[in-house]
Image (cartoon, rainbow over all chains, first blue to last red; front, top):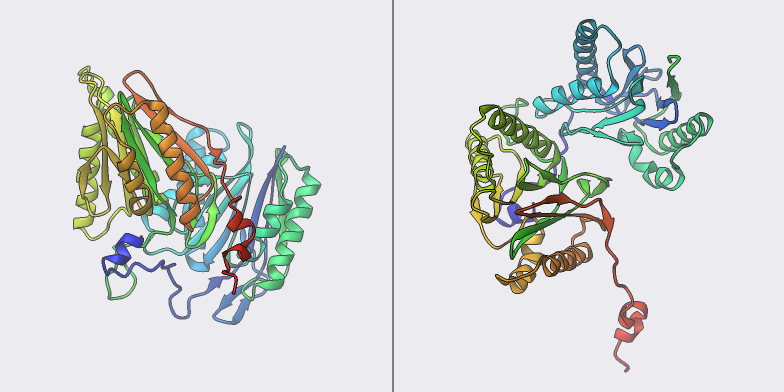
Length: 210
Length: 233
């Protein structure tokens, strides 16, 4: 990138921006894997500029029985992507004859986000429980790459808690520890990020469901 | 193509990998990269695999946008699958993969919708045992050399690699040179990480190491006690 800048090309790092009036999921979202499932959490604030359009938003959207997606970025884009993923996942599981895998859901989301990267502003965390691999967390950031992680934080509020999460995350936490970790992290993020706030919506996904 | 607004823009990289470096030695090639995916200045993804094997004879290292790199690896895996199914007993050679990538990236650049990457291709031909090291970038530029570095590495590592290169370099020496260069890059590249992977390919084997940390040196007296740098009045 430095080389390109030296050649006089304007290649400043540009995060795609919201269109005027577009509704923003300002957001702090998070998902943590534990032995037996995942804990997911999100704030509940949707903003248009600095007006809070919805203070009780549900950013945790079900894609299948035990698969959820945490949405950040443009509200419209993420709702549309989630709807498409749910559709394709549904068709796929009908053919498959059983519940779809988390990785499948994540991959479908990734393909949509990658192929439409210029038009979308969507940061997704797909998380859930399946019988093959247990609890899993997959992150799909803005460009449309896909990575599985032990835990993931996303949204504008996440920037304020990178240090906290790096310091406090431990591998193989118990379910209760994960719930604690998610609650505390999101509280801190919401405290500092103007685009995050409201209530914390939390869900625990295990083999017994949500 | 960007569909927002009347001004057409190329896609911008979002999660990016920094330098990949490589050097030939007598009988093979070594390449290396760190495991960082930067989100602007944020060190967001610290365990990314930026080195991949493509078939039994070729290593690829990717700088630039990581989602485009994942896409390219998928395309290459599909090409390899086709090649296997073709069943002519001939496997895709490193220079053929290099050429393919050059055409792919040039085609995208000509549509003003580039795959925002600089890729290192390294391998050893299975029939001719030719050692190969080449680079392809987002413009579709295609070139080969004995030493190779993308990103920041082009400024910092390339001169060091060029100085160290000899036709009779051993694998051990090459790995050491590469490690030293990665260390310097960690010292001087603000978008780098201390965790790296090293890939080696020879006529008989191909491997990518697990990620490991480089030891770094901070004990120069002038680092430890900066007032030593102040001249006495």
